[in-house]
Length: 175
Image (tube, rainbow, N blue to C red; front, top):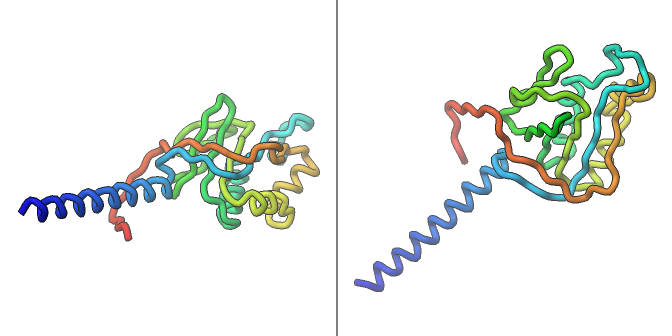
């Protein structure tokens, strides 16, 4: 009898460990944990050389385009930091909007310069950032209006904060 109960306890503990590991894996996938991995850091900033005009400033649409472009090219995770070290993790809950010259990410007001941290295969992310065709609008403004857009050198391991924005889920199922 005791050996049967011990076996049942071992199976229960194993099942619980597997369940906890599964929950942790899912939390990581949706951005609810801090993460560190190989990647790149990209800077997007308003032009300092030109008089302010709509083409010389970094827009929320630029950030959305970059986030989508990186995910299309295999990024595992992305966060965006603005002036004052306000960092927001991008998840499927994330909204990126603007109010006048302020960008709202997950409801947090962020202003340039923007540091976009991208985790993923470093070579693929470098190829993605240098794709002047896919990022034509940004590169045109870099060339014509001195919009600042470049990758920071030397950073291979990149740390991202966890998602801290609002999360309302209705009618969802985990598979």
